[in-house]
Image (tube, rainbow, N blue to C red; front, side, top):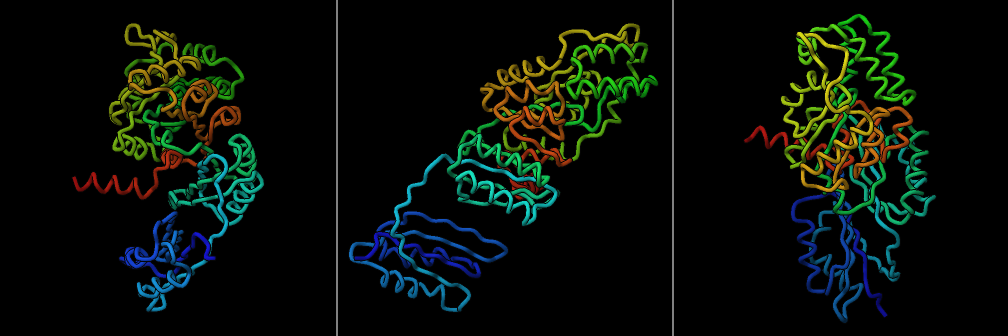
Length: 398
């Protein structure tokens, strides 16, 4: 008795209408296409089609249909027909594993795949998201426990110098519609308060306090109070002029521009100062922003903060406030930051990303990026470099 289903595996040089021609030939002998998958790499095609033959049809009829399609006639394409006698029911939830690194070689991929297998997982699909300025791949994995897989791949990430993100697959991933970023050392290169300290000649004192605060060694609010006090007497004109000399993190413009074109809302929340970052926020067209405000008297800084303090708890509160303003639940938000004062915000978001962060922050986040390009965040959302470039090309045409 013939098996209920057959698998047709098509390999060879891709060409227009190949798949269409084959499907057209199969329609007379197949009652149902039960599964199909295709990948093309540099013109080489692998197409798999599982079929349910019509009643009375079998192996010979399928082979005859393939021959009648004439897709193998020139010898550049081969079709193998094999029975699929097993009825495999996929088990476990699907998860997405995103890999990011300056270069991803066979050693790194081998370690990832062996780790997935050791957790009882199967890789169902592999997609290349980017090949520059970093390499990124997305794997669709079925089977293993989420936390078990995340822990196992976390070890691989450390050993292989590879960024690995593990997320549950599903529509909720693309539903993340608000992205809120820290400013200093995330959206911008360096720490703004260190630059202000340079204008006052107290760089070493401020830098030491900044480092201790970002590492979580002292309370951020206390550290901010100490550092701002050292800025007393600085002219507000000099503070505002600093905005023109700030450097964006590589990839920042691409990230913001792409998110805006895709309909995302963006926000920044900073333990820095509104007088400095306001021009940057306006230039980039960022939707929401919150930062500390330096107190000014007679055109000079008093060495104090005025208004609500944006500290670790304040950042999380502003994320919640931005989400409310945007009309979305926190589960549809993404937070990106590098310092200890970002931990509460990263924990509260639907996806928390530690960007070139201290170890204490990486442990608290859902995932981490260690590449120096902020637009690598897009790959964690499943947005490929090809899509980014297509959006840029469309903008130029319009």
